[in-house]
Length: 486
Image 1 (spheres, rainbow, N blue to C red):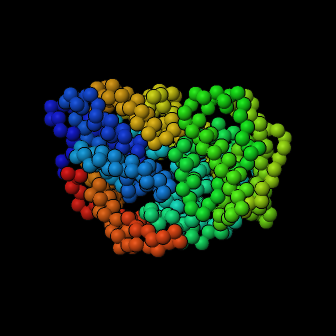
Image 2: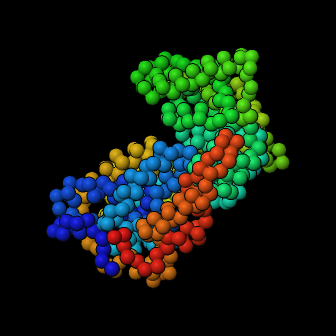
Image 3: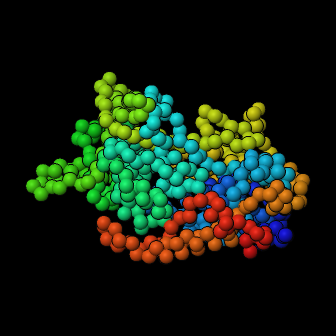
């Protein structure tokens, strides 16, 4: 088999392996292809992306709520990158299980780690281990039909709490409070729909430790809360406290100004609505609480029965401090959405305190703090789970710039045997880009077969339905005879 390379036959061939086929890894490949060295013909590229999942797109497919059509649209841009004939995709291949770091380093000039951050960050408060205490990332993986999570999710509590004021917290709260019929417009599988449709949840309480001017979500995420039908957004006047630092942030930051304006307008509309003579409460409520920090999960017989929070006040510097006033909320489930955390990778140094690969501007470091020749990192495993998907491009550019600067001095490739020969020898069943196209077509066909579906809000036409089982994905997209992406 001949390696697919970017078409500048006179330049030096640069073989690059990227571990992780989500946005971070794909952006890195794209920026390599757009680099001045490649454009000038100094470098030819052969890039292989590996992912432990059978499908590409990582966080976009399994970490973004299905009712985010604009963000899901990023797949279209990533799709165009993976269509290039100098990029190959190897799915269902895990570093440390199917391939080792030495396997890659001996076959490629450079290896880029782009595995992201997939676990929930810890929240060390009493009671966090109780039954009914959940990680927000785990819940996202469940409703996004990740193939490696359980198919069932307990939704038997009428009152639940979500801890956090970032976009993931709002995603979790919105899915918990939204009527499942509205999700039939998305790729949601039937078993997820059925469980959400049978959910006992009536009230979802979202808690942030600081005020409305210090939230970490975005205006788009906030406004999407109001798109849920038959769900009242409930706000509390005592939570709307603004100090000098808040006022300065509102005046200097249009995003903060927009969010504070949206929240205060909702508060006014809520008061007018509740005072109206014909007001009929919605069947579900989404409560937004500010200036309250979780202190303890309360429980009986090993199960969550409540949440204790401490009332906070703004400290004048953009932060908050406790007042010593405590409030108990009766809830049967608590979802922590206080951040993601990266995982260690086989054969690569790991910073367990930060959940990242130690690096300097993308150059991975060894235990002694020296750069490892030919080993790089990008995305959340490089910088931590900070920023939106779009920030990943700038992050990848920094890494790629250093990789190309190092290229002339990188260790020579030792093994010319193609990586698929090694995978075949080890009996690894892997998927490729053509396989993804087949699976994509199959999921669209499932939606077309479902046709128009009646719902409580009117008929909905399904566009696609996501395949859930790993085995089913592999059956549709596994390589029988490798032929590249051309």
